[in-house]
Image 1 (cartoon, rainbow, N blue to C red):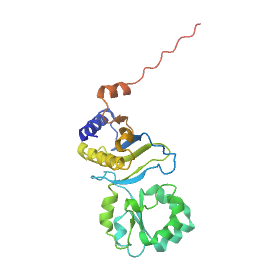
Image 2: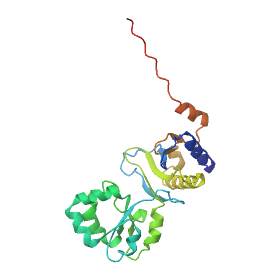
Image 3: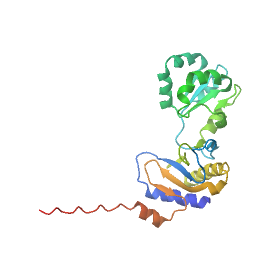
Image 4: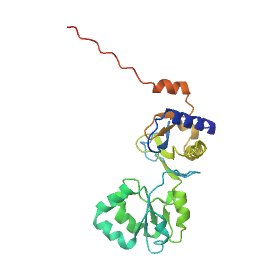
Length: 239
């Protein structure tokens, strides 16, 4: 996939998306072929580190012990081990955390009690700290560097269908930055596929409330596809 084609699709996306009173997220949607995700072992679940942070900052909650309790204050919320019992006694508090925070970071040597206290709620929502994303940190970690990395990290995952969807930017980013992020996420995914690009059906960009634009799609085709459909005229009943 060529960067120039991605930039062209971003320009069409801006042209055909209605202006909103907020900066819309731009999602990358990759439709796969030749992969049966219903078969065990065929599901994809990888993490990609993008070259540019998305403008929308992820809200991160840290679950740590005394070793990281001070340095973890760079995150939006810190829950230390001494407070775990409060959440274990009241699972509704954990549910509230899942509504307020996008990601969770864990101190590595506390994964046992973290799983016991938070796992039942975070696990099904895909929010358990994952070592493959870097979100499980040893007690001696530099959390400032980790925070920067996590703001650039996206999860590329298939669930019930052979589709991968991930936020790669927002409208207030430059076209070049969005294109860099798209290409980086795309290449990371392609290299994890058994037949690489032969497993790609098409690649789509979409704003939060706007139309989907295929990368490589002709502008005339987009205009025709998005043209309002004429409503059929109602026939008058004979009196």
